Length: 217
Image 1 (cartoon, rainbow, N blue to C red):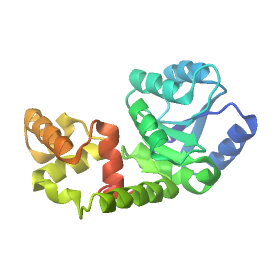
Image 2: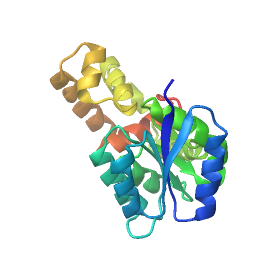
Image 3: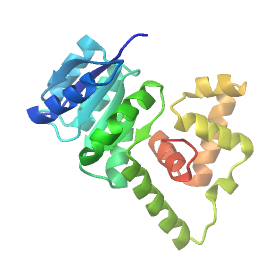
């Protein structure tokens, strides 16, 4: 079986060393490069085309969010996992908007990073358990304030199916193939469910699915 290739991007040498040593103990994962700033990361990712990029948010010369956007634009198959000290929703949304597939809290990364790499490599999103819990707590609070029971009840069965596939990272075309529908029909369901739930982009679809337990972390 081919190794999963990983590139580490962090401006702190001790963090890069710690992550590299951690990955060296995990069978099937190979570190192919290390970058110390965002611009170097973009250049290196073009050359190495790693399966997974571990990306610090606060990077010199080019921040981690912008570097992620450029890497994913060049190679949409790259699974970027953001490392951050911040657990609030605004940071997670920014990371997803940039094209990241995973989001880990730095002080808990040692516990979660192996599973994160495995899950992201399979094409699914991954969040630290702490992130998932924070999102769930925020969501429950909003639901109580609005006196709502379950917004999923607003969706048709087909819309719920489309929601899950999109949250898992599938394109309209891929979702259409799974459901044996046309891409146009899937796009119609996508538009309808986003309108019903007050969602505006794919990042918000993913976060909604996490809150509702529709996709498994």
